[in-house]
Image (cartoon, rainbow, N blue to C red; front, side, top):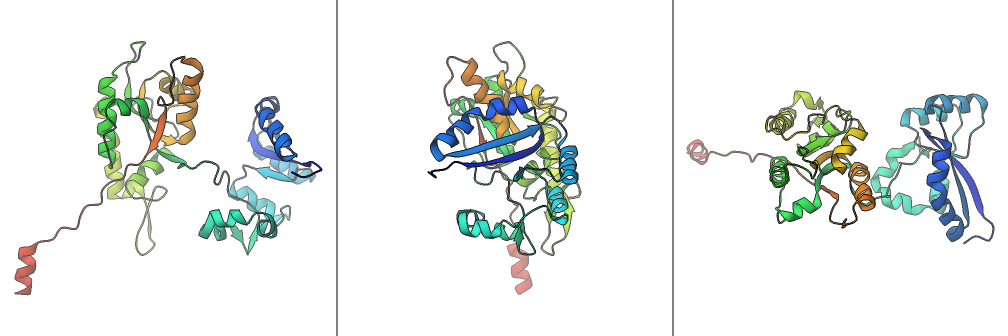
Length: 308
């Protein structure tokens, strides 16, 4: 621990109430100060982040660190000479970052200089977006294994059959999602069919949008099947977060496609406060489902005939 406190502030670029930030940051601020003698101040504003960042650029008044910038905004600041090269500091003080990023480290360099770092890298040992399943209900079934999207849905369907309604008599659903689906849900689904970020990349490097691929048709038919079975949350494609959270936290959802934090915030973080009988098994967990690539068909008779 350093003898003198290390003090610096950073602006989290988003529209967030400063009062809410101060309240939510109180414990981590105290912990860092007591354990590491680091006085870290998180700054937020109610104003829109683009407006605030433009004002900072125009006035030249901004904190030492800005978080939650997108790549286009970083490039804008770099072009105006407002950002320093972090590479020498990483080399000297944080070589572990290069170790963790591995070959990805070079992708963050611009002409050999490092102007921005990836957000949340290494914060959680979990995928960012994936399929999720209600763990306690899954365990009730004996945790049947699944590998493909169809098998994943079959398990969700059995879970819904065992819990067709919640304790309030409300209908339950096998699957839900959080709008806008095109930004996160579709790319995640597409990943189950072997696509990358919603695109199919051919051996020649050609990129094809998922909507124009056989895999895209398959994932569309998959969602259509869930819908036709009456087990897809009817608001799945228009769900605002609070609507989705209301369903999940009242035991109406068996699984969902989306970000890790949804299952936490709409699941066990609610239940552990409100349910006196809550156990750690009552939560959503991330799972993997991958479409099996069809095996290449061979025709022995024709091969033998051709050889003959």
